[in-house]
Image (cartoon, rainbow over all chains, first blue to last red; front, side):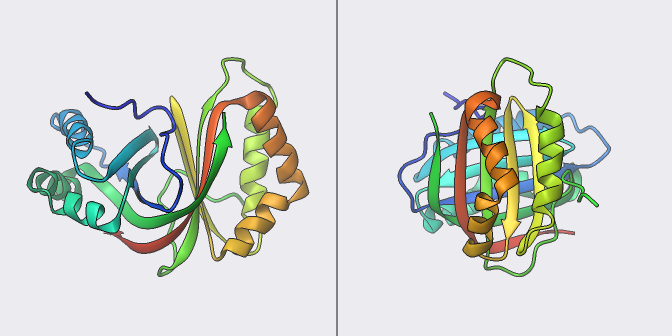
Length: 111
Length: 111
């Protein structure tokens, strides 16, 4: 089952880790993009240490993923299928992208 | 001048800090929301320690703001006009929201 990435994720008490992935797509529409993005969401959710994902695109795309540890993030970055997606991302899908790896220190919200 | 929040921000070499603000709007459309959001973007950009902002909404809204220090984040949270916006956010604009305060430890991207 794929998580709902259009709701704030219920994460555990900090500290935990976040990957902030921001991007601007290239002007060309690639047929494989949407399917690969969905496959990567489903695959990420199966990884050890995965805590959730949130994503929105409106000009800029922002995808947050949350993880239990830096080791979990490093393992996901090395995942073979994910490596293929990263290569396509660099080569054709994204005109610009940034990946930021963070330690979440505090969290609050409602409800 | 308001920064372009629809492009990845050029941030300095880590470490620096990020505030991840995720939200789902209430079903009611409030006339004051768009103007207040724009005013808060402009006001944030004038604060000491502000490094940039990125924002997208598609079901979920994700607004990233980047800061030089935790002190800069705390001062922005205490800002009087921002306090009014936070109150409206809690009381009428957002059905759900989460604020996460993070230390950015690593960053890479292209170009």
